Image (cartoon, rainbow, N blue to C red; front, side):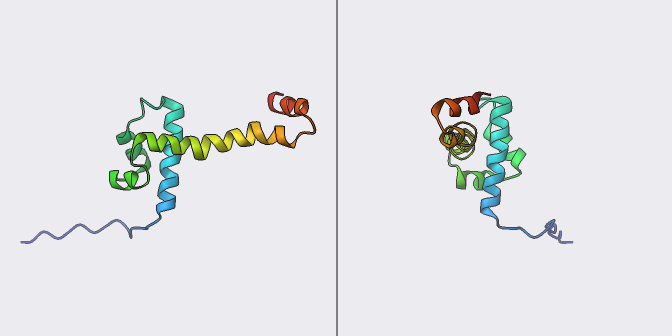
Length: 101
């Protein structure tokens, strides 16, 4: 008797940007919760439910992933919470107060 191949659970959806965003979300959360060194690539792959090939297609190294988190997530947060209020204020003093109050 010949074994039948297992059916796939569903059609594979090719969404590279969605996968990339999911990896960034998982990495950002892991780096904040456990730190960079305590977050292994294997743990990140498992949490994001992606293969090593898929992860490494977008982020060839853990360092590249961390730099993407900084560039795309941390920089945006700094811009929104620190830079934008200062630039929108009528004076530097008001801008600094807006950030720290």
